Image (cartoon, rainbow, N blue to C red; front, side):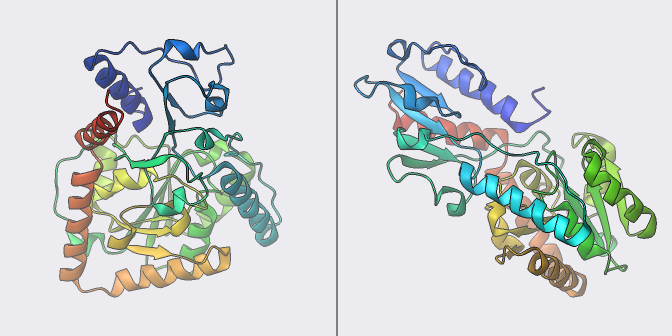
Amino acid sequence: MLNEHSMYWETAEMVRQLNERGLVVDFYDVHCTEPIEWASYAVAFVQSDRLAECPAKLPIKKVFYCTENYWAFQNLAELTRLHAFHARTGVWVKPERQTKVSFSDEYADYLTSFGTSFQQRLYSLRPEKHLLDISVAQLPAHVPKAVEPARRNFLWLGSGGAILKGVDLVVEAFREMPDATLYLGGALEREPRLWQWLKPLLGQYPNIVYLGWVDVTSAKFMELANRCIAQVYPSASEGGPGAVAQLLHFGLLPIVTRSAAVRSAHLGFEITDPEPEAIIGAIREHVRTVLDMPADELGQRSAAVQAFAGQHHTRPAYAASFAALLDKLAL
């Protein structure tokens, strides 16, 4: 599991560092309802709403470990995307990424984040903000981008809640661009109502290639990623997506929405208009820009993306950023 998602390794690293500093760690699953003996602890790292339960008089240091946009924003963002998808296609898809209500930020001393200021804007002003560097499961060997073979290949990589993550918008954009190839990485057939819309389109548009679930640590995936020039990820709500961070290591320029809270967006293209039709149009515009960009500039941009990933999206980078938080907490 340590390589399945960045959060698993990061959780293990948190425990390792706390142990190294002499602390004993108890773990409560996010779904656990067992009472917490708050007085037993010197510090609490909480993702759920449970910081509200902690008595204010206790001298416990409280950290809201934030990995997404504010719950009200995210839930509305997904429902809005589902409504827009139905308006365009006549297909209703069930929500997959509705998140639980949490007011822990209002009780926290510190709030961590992986994303941009967009992610933080709806959270309480009370806690001090601390930026963590999200890690990746695979740190591939550095391969300079062969621009010309890669120029026309683009990749969308995502997990559950594909409408929230904009897969429909990417598909609709590439339907009108037969001179560019879109690869879709993710188990989209697990969302049957989305799949019933997407599957016929795969047969109609040969430039849209479905990969299914992919192992980002596999040689096959690395070979494919090295043959792509950019990633397209118009998510309606993220907290600094790990999929984007992973693909940066392959030199894939990000074409992303502002609501995806991608720190490397300045190295690629950021879409600021949240309306689906505007996003589709912006994707086409940015893809055409990439198709027409001089090879030297594309190569330089790809190298800059890889350098950013090497600085901010590795396990050592996460470890250093978490250690800096522990230093702030004087642990």
